[in-house]
Length: 282
Image (cartoon, rainbow, N blue to C red; front, side, top):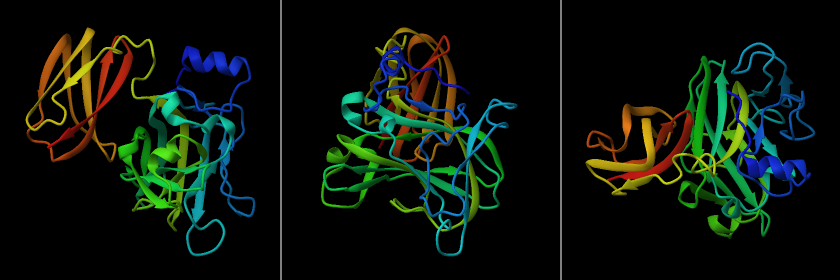
């Protein structure tokens, strides 16, 4: 699934301005490079660009990362990026989600997290919840929320807010707990279409005026939009779909009483466009 840049992002790239994260910024690896993703100059198994077999099949490039397990360089499942396009003020850019396609051909489950470091004093934060990429799984689309409440501080003295306002490094890693360092594991992870999304996917989305209430909610959650909603999908914090349904209306309600307490993402679709909202089930 190839993502399309927003008009804002496209305009900025046309001007050559990449020093600030922008909505729609994507690494799709179609230029045959790793687009800045690395795991250190001394690694014996750096990430590589694979030229075919991505989510779109033949001739769709993707990033492959292998970790050897054991000890020493290359033992951990992690890639990091300091390219300017990933850095800067995530608040000002309105980034609310990191979406990516992932595939796990390994024999071990992977818990994937997004981590960031702040330029001020190098405080490090990691998504509190990871997404489970099961062993022997094929390509799937995953989402990680990257708002302030979604992170745990794993090093340093600054706040999550401080880091999100001035990011100087991002990481994608496997670890069963929030961390800045990847977990030691013998595994292979395939990644593609790594994208910084606003909480509403594009600024001129037909669903930009959507409302979700009450929030938090305990039994019923209501939603309305300025245009018709075709369908919805609800995901838990591990990225698993837990509910879905058709709407075909500007407003509707969903019974969430059977959901466990916690944070969820609800994705709405209208005429092929999507918007994502977050809600808390009490």
